Image 1 (cartoon, rainbow, N blue to C red):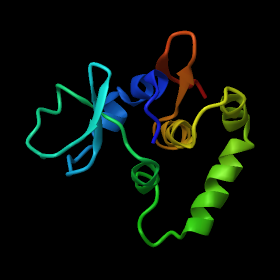
Image 2 (image 1 turned 60 degrees about the vertical axis):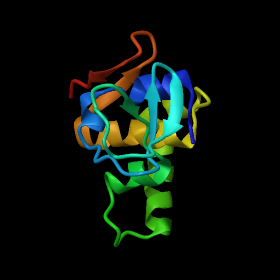
Image 3 (image 1 turned 60 degrees about the horizontal axis):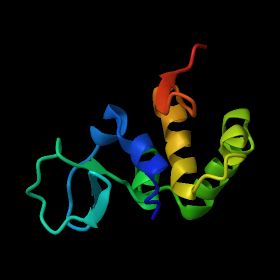
Image 4 (image 1 turned 180 degrees about the vertical axis):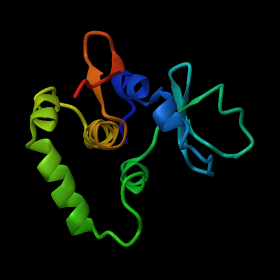
Length: 122
């Protein structure tokens, strides 16, 4: 589970936070303190959800897609220009999946200098 400040910042966007349906055991950050939810009664505006790798994968694949297909998809992304540039940065698997999701679903890239997601002009 990635608990780095960079991953927290990357997750703090409406595209990811808007998909969160709080469940017991989800990891959240509250002013840098990271903890698993012990209740689903929480104000979503007060914390940042930190999706696990399986939760990130579920954002783009339904449960009929097997692990081999998921691995192939992230491998293909990792050798693409967008993925390769990110992989050179020594990010975690959660970060790589997040970068792929933001590319595939929202046409956005992580800007290292601005530390935010930016729209990609096609």
